[in-house]
Length: 133
Image (cartoon, rainbow, N blue to C red; front, side):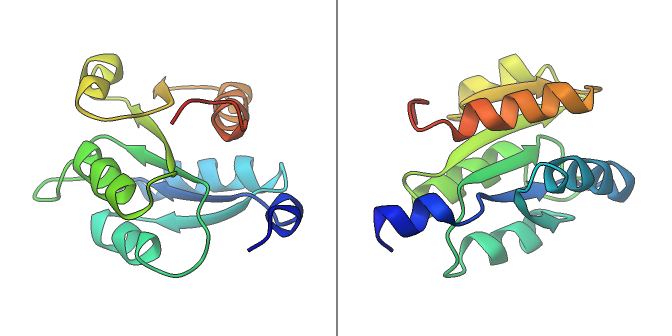
């Protein structure tokens, strides 16, 4: 894909959370800002999207993905191995996300609960070309 084509396409965000209600909230907020969103209710669904051929600009994942499921940090690390330029936002309501972030490479962390404006601000900051990977 050429640079001018990439600049014109909608930014693609993969959102991963094991709470369907919270996942729908995040998807609605992001779609209302003209972002293309692929929701995933868990690790396996997210990996399937990440391993696909479509461009992905950002992975927004919860740290805790449910009992018996790999951690969101594992998901983010695997996703960045597959897509070297992928940016990640970690979020959590049950973990101190800043401490957990030491084991990953997020560009932004979000502690739940957060307001829609905080979510959009974090996502837009992460999608900035100058944001370190």
